[in-house]
Image (cartoon, one colour):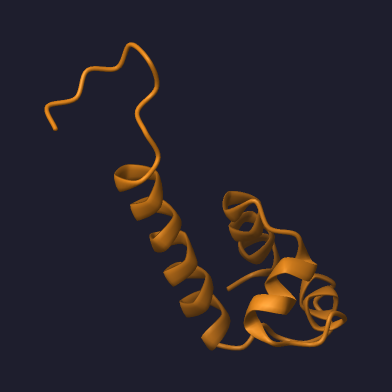
Length: 74
């Protein structure tokens, strides 16, 4: 995962770096070092963010009510 992909995933999740740190249990300076390219992003991070993005997608599909005017067959 590149620093740009990491940042894009946080934006897609509507998370700040502090949100990620709290949920992933990492020090608040760690993502800053990743984004600056000082240290590589570990392999577990894309998996963690991928799962979070999938949960968000499922939430958006099954929990968030459809917008008024949208027809659903459910």
